[in-house]
Structure formats: C-alpha cells, structure tokens
Image (cartoon, rainbow, N blue to C red; front, top):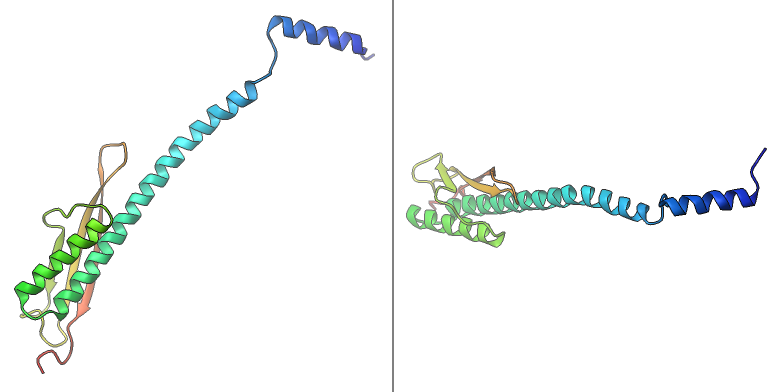
Length: 151
C-alpha cells in the first residue's frame, strides 16, 4: 500500500524540522568541484602558453641569427647582429637574453664562404608559473651562404 498525500507532507515537514533538507547543497557541490577542476586547468593553460611563447621566441631568434650570419659581410659584425636578433626575438615574447643563449657554428672559415653551412642554436629557460623549477627550450636552425658570395 502506498502512503497518501498527508503522510508525504508529514514526512517532509519532519525532515525539514530535523534540518535534513537538501536545499542549496547542489550549488555548493558544483562550486567546490568547479574550483577543484578549474585551478589545475588554469595552471595547465598558463604553463603551456609560456612554453609555446618560449618555443616561438627561440625559433624566431635562431632562424634570424642563422640568416644574418649567412648573409652579412664581416664575421664580427655578423655575430653582433645575430646576437641582437636573438635579444629582440626573446624580448618580444617577454624572455630575458641570458648569457650563452646563442651558439653559432660555421662549417667553413670564414663563415660566409660560398655555400657554407651556418647554424644557430638558441636556448631559453622557462620558469614554471607558481612552482619552482625551469623547463629548457632549445631550437637549432641552419642556413646556407649564397653560392656567389665572393663574386
């Protein structure tokens, strides 16, 4: 047999008097779970964004440094300009240019010999948001000097 409407009403009133009502608890549970999921997700987005910016900065700096080294007359001038290109690329993404961030290699001596291969390697250390520690990012780009450079 099922209980009538009076029985249900009496049971509900008895629960409300004891303080067993569920009113408002779903919103609190939703907020708690939302915060528990949102904080790690926000940290992941911040970290991945910072790593992507470092990769973009290192790639841009390495590409331009290798091009400058392959196309600029005078090895000292070319090295200075390559370092300036890396500093500019890193600063554009908000990273300081640490000493030793750029490493230049030449397959020939002088670097600007016809069809000489030159390489630039850029290293950036990315500080993790909130946590101690760094993640190294390294990019290497190669360029070739012009065939008719001495003509």
